[in-house]
Amino acid sequence: MTSMSFNGGNLKGRVLPPPSKSHTHRAFFLASMAQGRSRIGHALFSDDTRATLDACSKMGSSYSIEGGSVDICGGELHAPESVVDANNSGTTMRIFTGLCSMFDREVTITGDESLQKRPMGPLLDALSQNGTVCTSREGGLPPVTVKGPNPGGEVHIDGSVSSQYITSLLMTGPMLANDSRIVVEGSMVSAPYLDVTAHMMGLFGAEVQRDGNVFTVRGGTGYRPYDYNVPSDFSSAAFPLVAGALGGEVTVTGMDLNDPQGDRKIVDVLRTVGCGVTVNGDTITASKHMLKGCELDMGEIPDLFPIVAVLLSTAEGDSRLYGAPQLKFKESNRIETVVNMINAIGGDAEATDDGCIIHGKDVLEGGSIVHKGDHRIMMSAAIASLVCNGPVMMDDAECCAVSYPDFPEQMASLGMNMEVL
Picture (cartoon, rainbow, N blue to C red):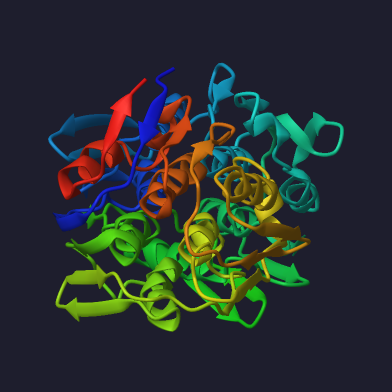
């Protein structure tokens, strides 16, 4: 593990954020289920997405990598012959669990120590409603084992914990004999991700209809090959954009504000807090201004919670981030980890059940933080060094490779000071 120290700087320049992790996961799975060869361009190669490629190959698809593209040959699928390790990727674990319900043999999916703390119960309960045999550790925790075949039909699922459960059911639907009717009960957290799922399924030939909290997927159709270009990731672009808002002027390129990514709302967030924001075609520029505290509903944009909390840590007045209790079930308990991180470097934050309250300070002090291997906490803390009098230090800086492998190099190119300890 590499220990690093980040010590702010005056930032200026432009960067190309990595491709979307969420889109890459979905594209790899969809192409693997399609009958034939698909090319996935501008794909993200990270620890998490490589876990998805490995899972797909274990169920019978094959792939080759050329530059930033992946050619995937799918369609001839079978139950994996060995345990599938999703490592630290919750998206891989959740989507693949649903897909494996189409097989008539037992499949076991596991992950690392952190992933084995993330709940799977709502998805397993939903799969069981149509006869899939599901087992797990107590409390619905991984490893999980599923055995189909899942015939399709109507299922009811709690939508208050993770949209990934619903994505898993949606993406499995076209592969099942009968139509699927998915009834989401309670709140539907991170709903924009479901728009991404349905949109991409349509590109690969599936039929998805939505009526409020009810989704209908036509069964028996499978998927057709499609050449798909992964868009740049707004949740990753948020880090250099906030860096510009706190420490200079930064431009991100390759962005598509018409893409259904929910995290494109980072542009609205920056404007709300008083940051200078300019959008010109596929570029977005954020520049340093006096920031003001505010209240923000994070329910549909939970991945932005850590970096938005840093953005507001030195804003004038008090701020409240709310509406995202599902943050407790991410790579870490992100409510707890974010609050501890901000307070460890001299900020003033307190946890709530669905977010946090931040009392803005003129400047933070710096210090050592514990990110618990959570890539978004690690990168947020590095950006926080821009408003600290002293350095921000941490172990395991490599964990950013989960979603943003070039993060340290790109930040250094903009002028951030850092060193390996």
